[in-house]
Image (cartoon, rainbow, N blue to C red; front, side, top):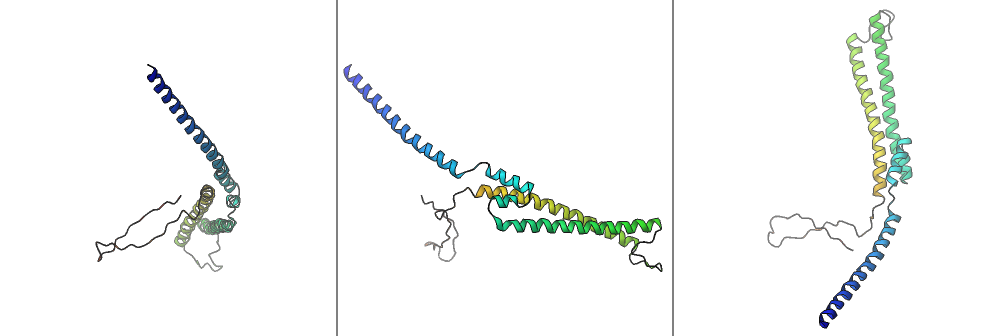
Length: 193
């Protein structure tokens, strides 16, 4: 009976010390990792970048400190907006001329002597083409606007990842000793800690 209690006491002491040793080292590591994780990763950063881009195009890129992207965003939005406005004014011009002609009023494409520069069918084709171009320009403007918001958010996410020199892909060629006549292609990933 005495031997049994000694063995039970030894097992109890062993498991308690083993449990305490794991608990102490794990707690210290976990708290340290949590502190480091909170320093590196800002959960609100992507949403702030998207918010700034939605309010002011290019604002998210400025928030991410990617200043070189701002002129690209502005140029894309300005260009598509310019084409929208230009196509819309031309569409209205041809539509007004077509309506005036149908009402019997002289339009800008009819000379003083009654010579017609553009036929009725030509005015209708021009309206269809310009309306399509106008709608496409509007769609392009909306797509550029949404893309710059998404780009700012994704960039804010990616800025928080670790990209040091240990993370690399180096292609190398290794000849196959069995088959010399046909080259073999493969991929090998190597992690270094």
